[in-house]
Length: 173
Length: 295
Image (cartoon, rainbow over the protein chains, first blue to last red):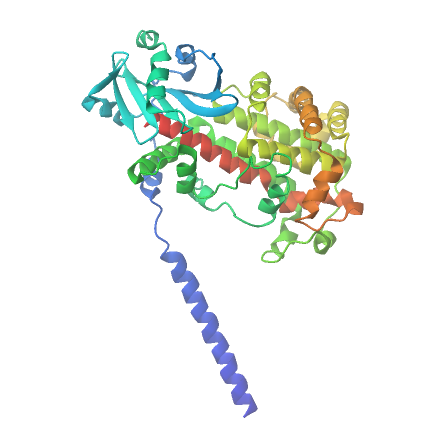
């Protein structure tokens, strides 16, 4: 009896290990692809870039940002080709992000203004999601204010967009 | 091709030695660091947006930005990962056997060699410079902008500030003691370029350190550390940080004996990947902040 017992136990063990391997492997294979897998695939193709070659340097945008003051502090966070961004802080707390981007890199960002029905400071404006307001200047530069605190409302966003030197940005060569 | 950014963020651990060790430093900056993991979760938390189409658009743009090598985000990720791995490479094999178990310092001691003070001091300085260079890569300012980095340090928060706290505690105070800043400065001041070349941490990231030849890089590292010493000194004193309270809090999570301090640096090197962990979180945040502004 003993050898038989030993063999069945041994066989059971093998079956158990094999089954767990099958589960492990099939478990890995059935992992659904990420919702961002398509973007990963498209952006990994040769010669695909995220930023247009002839996009304006972010450093060019800095001088058009609203001046800090009246309790507000402005901290630049990114300055890349075609993009500049600054944090707006009040009493040391982040309340909004201010940004200028060149839509040459992302034409779809400019397209959304074609249906704009509102204006801020004379420029077509849109609301996006629940935290963003932006205008398009010179059919090219998107100026966006994003709320980071609930106290910073849609009206605040419009007010801060108006504080950018939009006329100056329009003259940017 | 490198790993997609969403995978790197999705794979960030929610438990384990790195997360425990970082949580042990919560007493320095209470509540300022949350272990934010998962790509869509990070998008929701950073932007406050909940609309699925919006989250998709932000994530897609972030993926594009990360994959465009000219934008510097991948170089920053490489720096964060390399500085962690270079320092811990020697102990990795030993570490592999411990996976799945609680990592106990004492059980691990046999696999460690004490880390000489000089090597630890070099690591401290090199890691600080890696932070500076990665910061410049992420934010798009020239790689040797010490002044810009200093100005930004005052505004560091969340995972970026936690990384600096971990640098001060795990690579400074705990292994080197209260005079860690002076030790870093004097080590760099007396180091020859040849000695720097032999340091494993430096070897890993050498290519992206500004300064030209090794002598120039040595000068840049020393100069950077010297410029940050004021911020570090103030930070340590304003937070009342000591070797004892840093070690004491770490001991709540990881069993470490105070009489084996020369082993602690080596132990932390292999078991705590705080640059990669918080660096991935910083990168994800910056990418998402840019993506939402551009769409």
